[in-house]
Length: 203
Image: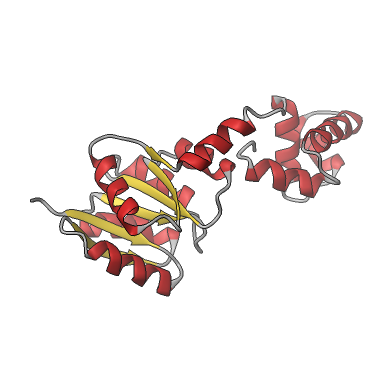
């Protein structure tokens, strides 16, 4: 039996050690590297010649989704399993777009994680069914390209005049686009609209 070489990226040491211990009990999986930061994933994957990277989403340095994209670009043969505490449909969509091969919530049994690791190596995509259903229920983004562009520009706190200058629009037009985006997100203000759109994977 050939061993599956696994990299584990999780910033909470107790969770990381528990996952490593549980997955290490599997007869065909060897946890060869552990990191606590997203920006350490690529170097560790290279150094330890891993087959699969198991990445948490919320990590310092770089999110698991950003790390997945970097792995997909630099080491396309490494399979990526993303796990998260937060079962948000938007995270699922963004993870899949970044090149992840599997997306599971952290409270899944260790046996299910191990099975996902095996399945991605055969070329399968493994997605938490509840999250998949929620992502489908959320549907496509209601934002137009312009509304998305203006809302994204507002995300860093830019005022209307700055957004207008950057996008070559009038301030009135920017105001209208922001108003429509806020309305479509059922939000009270632009910050809440940005947060909602990000959570749903629409920005």
